[in-house]
Length: 78
Ligand SMILES: [Zn+2]
Image 1 (spheres, rainbow, N blue to C red):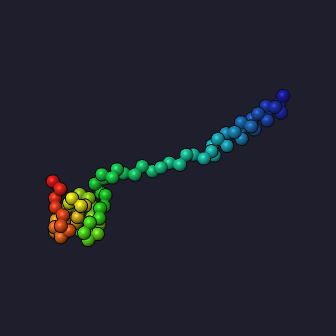
Image 2: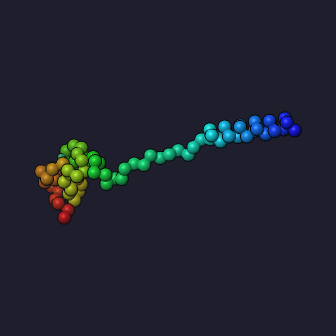
Image 3: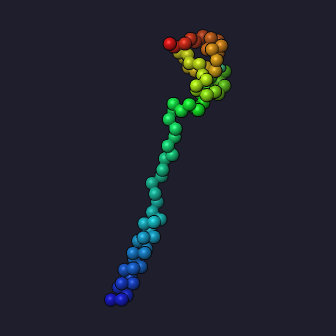
């Protein structure tokens, strides 16, 4: 009976160790929303990168300045 208890204890320990080492599901890091204020965009005319809040929006895309929007023969979508 004593050996049975020891065997049971060993089995419980092995089970606990296996359970502790079980592979956890891969955690996908939460990326910030695309509307994040620090998101960088590319000027549709010259290709320069700039923060989205500084971009000038046109009908064809986003630009670094109103000059490039004009050069690209685009205009304010509003
Ligand atoms: Zn530009």
